[in-house]
Length: 306
Image (cartoon, rainbow, N blue to C red; front, side, top):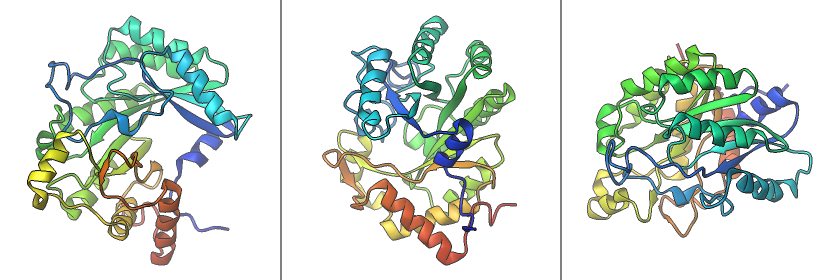
């Protein structure tokens, strides 16, 4: 029997659906309170939505059109695949409730879509929307993914996030209390955070009722304020080389709650937008290196969790 290393997302989906399932990104035309002036302007200092938006994912197209093009792209390789509509761009709970319901329900009408994933901010989850999402979760697969980014309020302020960690705790707990699956997204290596702080973050997040966690390395992207900050003061940043990052991830996963699903370890931005770090690896190659390091160290998820 192969040694247990960590709970991976693809296995989790197979257990849920009994078949291969792929997320299809959807841009439903939302904005963000940190861009339109409600919380701030300009967005988070690291953010450029072009880094993770596929070519077919454009707000000028309807939700159905984007799903159709996404399915064509993936079904060439896996004709029997099922899909999760992934509302990914900007803040996907930031609109009037009827407009949100219309977009979510449109996605669920599409053939072979077996559920939805909603990416949002922890300060954009009103109770009225939770009432609807609670009902929705009882008739389809639903995952609400919060952009947590860090547990440190000083860092959240520094990157112009526009919310506190207390907002994260509140949103995650209120969502989980409704019986809704809750995911989180964090960025490892944000400016000013030490390795010890990052590992402590894993312990802190493990106390929350999170089902799924997504890890990304800090990337400096062209066109962002953080890129300008790096150009002016590179000494304020610590960009992990690949071996150092692998060891950081292994330590982080050891401190995670053993039952949490780890969706991913890193992000891969388009080369034309990426300033640094450029590891020259595909995501699957990095995953294999992380697994290899875990085996070498006798490591597994939750090994150092108390």
